[in-house]
Length: 371
Ligand SMILES: NC(=O)c1ccc[n+]([C@@H]2O[C@H](COP(=O)([O-])OP(=O)(O)OC[C@H]3O[C@@H](n4cnc5c(N)ncnc54)[C@H](OP(=O)(O)O)[C@@H]3O)[C@@H](O)[C@H]2O)c1
Ligand SMILES: [Zn+2]
Ligand SMILES: [Zn+2]
Image (cartoon, rainbow, N blue to C red; front, side):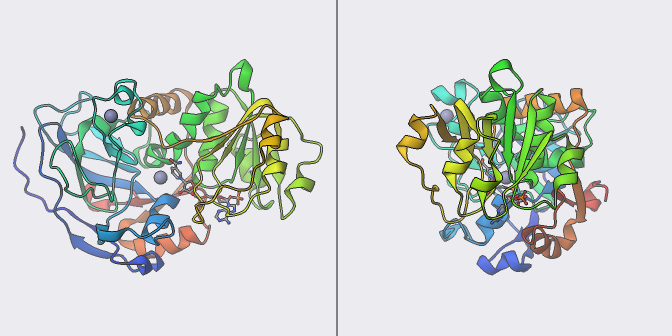
């Protein structure tokens, strides 16, 4: 093991659901006890994902005994401490990324198949989780902070070609769309036409990564405001739903093999969306509306089109590695706006207001992050 810890773990914590309005407080917190397969990271960058804000606002439900919580799960930083059983060949000084998951049992069927995100023992989220394998029951703390500690299995070395700030949002936003894109064969003969609902953080990765995999991407957005951006990102088609999806999709029936829904809109006309799919098509939810309800679907809508509706949770460490390599090989660049982490209480309300084009990334300048 390397040198002793001569730094404090400090971060921007929420104390109640109002914290999301710009009331995070800078606090010192106690990380998990250091285990031999852990690393410590000096955080340089952390993206702001809509899951952070839905957790902070308790939009997905009460977080119970998890207050105060330090959210953030698109982390990039420098490794400053390694245990003797550190994985992924990580050594001190490496630049690594951590996404939404920070632990799992590492021995079940799914963990052994590079599907740690579906671990039978339950996944440990990067914040508001409780460690189980080591340092049992201690709480996980996320990336709106100056240091992160956790299992090295979930830390991904960044390819040198990638800008570390641009890589940060790939660790959740990118991976979450990459996973269903590859699962359903985007870019291959059976899945040439991909639709992405919602052009936000995840959605813009849907366009970039769908293109990088060789698919033809259609963006489905609720207004025409982002059309130019969508084209610049590489989308070939742009559909504006307005408030009448059925009307908007006339003439586009059976045009898509796969639809990934990144929107968190509480209501959707599913019959209209499903009409866009070719037979054998897949509609995959990744966006999680705060209502927690599935839009209404009838069996007939699925049966008559031979359609499938499903969901997908983040990405596994192996998928994150593959995605980062794809981004390096194909020169994929996220569209980000950098905010000093000290301005977090301005950045979060601005992100919630829908101003990000397309991901806000918090920068820790004292840790070497570049504004
Ligand atoms: N499944 C997973 O593992 C996973 C992982 C990460 C995030 N998520 C979830 O994925 C969703 C998207 O996250 P994100 O960070 O990409 O969010 P985001 O940047 O805020 O983007 C969401 C997009 O959805 C569209 N939208 C349409 N109606 C909306 C409404 N009523 N309210 C908000 N957005 C609406 C907007 O695009 P247009 O303007 O183009 O319509 C918006 O840009 C969130 O629900 C998040 O919690 C899930
Ligand atoms: Zn497992
Ligand atoms: Zn996320």
